[in-house]
Structure formats: structure tokens, C-alpha cells
Length: 292
Ligand code: BTN
Image 1 (tube, rainbow, N blue to C red):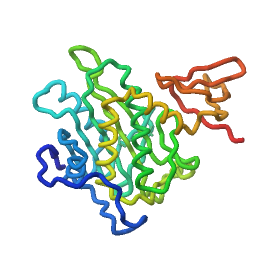
Image 2 (image 1 turned 90 degrees about the vertical axis):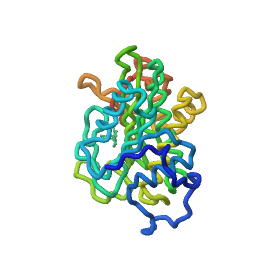
Image 3 (image 1 turned 180 degrees about the vertical axis):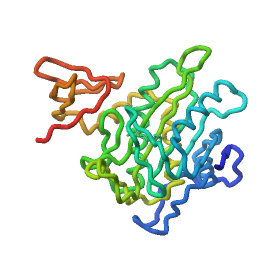
Image 4 (image 1 turned 135 degrees about the vertical axis):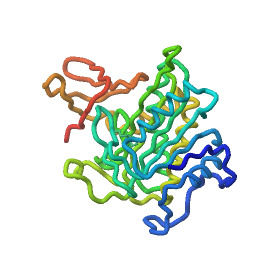
């Protein structure tokens, strides 16, 4: 494990600019390097972030949670931001405790820890702001046109390439939201998926930058977005990128299949669906688009 406080990095990098290497180029350096991540973050003006890079872990989210707890028990000894990434995960997890497939070399698995210390409303905005930030980076470095599937999966042409999981640690003294841990898993060059994912998973295999720079760029966008997660602009962009709004959807409710038209997402992150019985507000859950 390499643990770097990138405020101490001497190897200041250029700004996080778009790479010019040819797409699908085998010459792209895909290694995970704490030095490269640190250097790229410093170039983007982020110098107060602890960086931890591992070969294999259970889940970067768990390491992120531990870090978040230490931010509150040891405020002087920890930085307000942390980035934990691993080449592979043995217990990568998604929402509802689902397994997140995390093979080595072919994807990115990262958790960002942000000390927030504000009322809980910010939590949902950070989640939606993260999805938008991830789309920005993908569009800058690939030909793909990502869409956001409520709540915050990133899809391409009906298949999922990136999942986002946001968790929180509360400040034990005040009970308010202390730190958020934002986990991002992205398939890059994974060619073979387990049977259950084969038809629904997608790999973004035309990135023009390597994993370390990609991780730094995603982190930098999210750290910056987290400074004003309630921005109306970000939220409108989140909705405009929605794969689901304006579509007929179905979901299961107490073993009953329900259907309706997805008409809006409110600031609390709820999906508003117009059904024959009136408007329904969905808090979370798996919603599928009805085939036309
Ligand atoms: C989802 O698909 O529901 C969210 C998936 C989130 C996966 C990432 S990979 C890095 C971090 N560590 C985890 O165990 N999960 C997140």
C-alpha cells in the first residue's frame, strides 16, 4: 500500500488536460500509481488529499469509512479529503448490498472521502453531482455518450458501465453528516463478465488516458462539485442526462408489477412517476424502462 499526502508531492504535474494519445492505444500507461495520481491532483490545485493505492482489497468503501471515522476522532491528524483506490476488490459492493464485479487491471475502483459537516440535505446533492462529474470526465476522454440511470448508474446504449455508491459517516458528537464516502466503479477494458452481467454490463474501452490520470480527474471533478453540490445548474444537468425521464418505466412493489411514465426527479432525488392512479414518488429502487 502506498499512502501519500499529495500536499507533500514535489512532482507537480501539468494541468489535467485532455490526452492526445490515440484511442485504444496500448501505449497508454494503465498502472495505478499514487505518485501519478498525486501529481495530477496537484496540477488541478488539490493539495490536501490523502491518497492510498492498493493491489487488492475487500472494498475501498470500507477503507474509506475507516478513514472518515478517523477524520472525526483525529481532526488534526487527517486531511479533509481522501482517495482510496485498488487494482481489484474481492468484496466490491453496490447499492442494496449487491456484489460489484472488480477484476484486476481492467477497471477503476475508487472511494473518495469528503469531510462535509453540514446538514444531511447535502448528501443527495453530492450523489447526483457525482454522476454528472463522472459523465464530464468520460466525455472528455472517450467517444461515448453517457446517460444517467436513476439514481446514479452511468449507462451506454442500455448497458451499465459505471456504478456509484454514496455512504455517510456521522459526526458522533453532533449527529450531523460528518463525511461522505463516494465509491465509483467503472469497467474499462473488461472483456469477460460473469454470466449474470454479460448482457447488461459495458466497458468504456476507448479512454485516451490511463487509469491513474482518470482516477485523479474524476476525483478532482467530484471534489470541486462537492463545494457547491446544491448548484441548480448541476441538478438541471443531472436531469437532462437522465436515461429514464420521459420514458415508460416499470418496477415491483410488494410483488406487484407497476408501470407509469417517469416525469421528474425532485431535489430529494425521488423519481416522480405518472401512473393511472396519479403521481407516485419513488425513493429508491430498481426501475426498468419498458421496451417499446
Ligand atoms: C452500484 O452499482 O450500485 C454501485 C457500485 C459501486 C462500486 C464501487 S467500486 C469502488 C467502491 N468500493 C466498493 O465496494 N463499491 C464502490
